Image 1: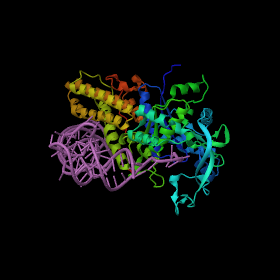
Image 2: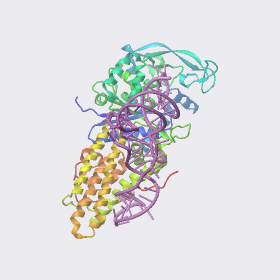
Image 3: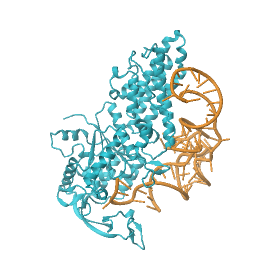
Image 4: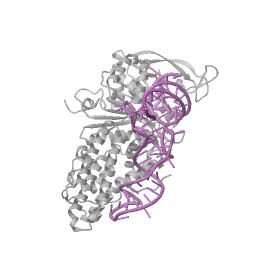
Length: 530
RNA sequence: GGCGGGGUAGCUCAGCCUGGUAGAGCAAGCGGCUCAUAAUCGCUGUGUCGCCGGUUCAAGUCCGGCCCUCGCUACCA
């Protein structure tokens, strides 16, 4: 079995109880674009997303809504989470839910294995407990009362220290191994700032951590195979989705096992910086404990800021993806967030900025260029792509710029630098617009003697657009497929999804004679919103 | 408190590692062009580069101190 390994990309699994907002969509889009780019390099890929569905909160809201937890999460997944994937045009290969059998089986097997190898042991967890909430509280969530007293933030009543019997994972044993791993693999946590935080956290020394909860406190979870009074604590259930989804634990010789062998380890695991520690400390320690390879890169991206603050429901700054997509379309949504925010840093979102960038770069830039080219081929050549005459210096210079742009974009994608890749692509669009203005094909068309030159210029424009379509296809698959069709490319070059990144830089692949059509604007100019 | 980001043009940001007295895009103004989605192309920036001090012939750029802001500092996503 030496089948090639897939380039494996994951998003976090989203907590079903949350309302999907553009922050979730941002992560998913990033994963989708990264995957599509690698797919267009001709690599085998696998892109996973899904939902995290266990825990107290889900259990409680289900009860509040008068339904069983399973019914509740089924409803949320079908009405909220899966539709978002359609909205943003995600091309995930799979969708994992933590309440499904394939996940639960894998989780049980995983922890059973760790228990057998002595890495899980029984002990007591002690923490602040609120009787009103009937649950343990986080020290950081408590509010100060009189003296040393701590109060429950919900009930305002004093919490009491309570003990609970739990199973613990020997996290402490991995302190040095994790530090050593990150020393040897600086690319394993990106960006650098995220890596620093994780390393300084680990350097404090790790402590063993409770990986289960008593059923009488949290019933909505995956039971421990060896202790029916305990369920797996949500994080130690959720993290495992990345391997259960691709067949972890499947028997040798099965297709599932095959999938696992050719997919794990993940190449890029995208996470929001708020859940970095779980992914860069607990998760790799768990994998080490199970003798599995570690993900190559965990990339923590920043938050979307609205009005300078982290988006939040309580401040009513949570924005649903549809709000944007309904007006601008999924392609523009995808383009905007990846283009205007340095991946890894926090980024400001504003409707004004979105609108401005849409009009400047998509409508006036790329879209208008497509209009110019297709309109002129129709006007001057009856819609038939002309055969170019001898190339002049300006044409050759543009061809060189294309080669450079493809290289820049490809290298940027290797760094998971979406903004860099799109900047390179935009640079080429600008170069082509300038080329058109300087070559003045509309003047050439006025004199029959210039017909050969006109043909060359028109061909160059369309061929440049072919490359532009490929370069932007991972980000804007819908409109680039349209553009591909307008150029008459499908009949000769096949679907755009099959066009490789490398072929974008090979000049002259679009054969003269194709039918070029004008069509509606790819990105119509839009009025200000809000 | 400790650690880590960030503080640069009206807005969003790059530059700082490898010092040479400041850049991009957007917005605004003027001009060119007319194939195109009133689009495109060119020209136009007097900014205390958070503050103070130091090193240097020369400092957003290196060093020290300070201020503001965001985040991390163990079992909440």
